[in-house]
Image (spheres, rainbow, N blue to C red):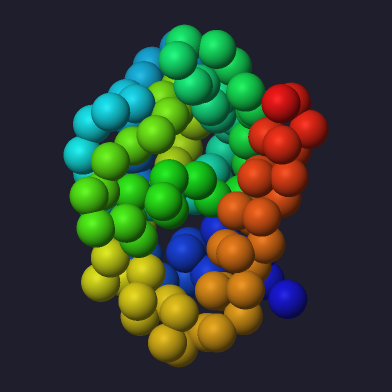
Length: 123
């Protein structure tokens, strides 16, 4: 089974890949957005109320909540921990990936569930 980022790389061309130097904010808590991200290279720190709650590794996806919820609000901040190369997936490409490769949807759900489990352990 492909990791979500592998499916994203197959679907997207290089115009959908962005670079972020270490320390740069990818998105800010409380802002509106309609894309999700996949880490091609690097690591990303997730912060809630300016506290680091986890570090996401190369090969994983993040930010899918704002893509899926009707208010499109970010409930966390994403910051590049190291220099990153990140794929950006909009709703149209996300829906295409889900339709054409249903296992992509399962892997995204697994990633989201794993993240939620780790967060619960912190509380």
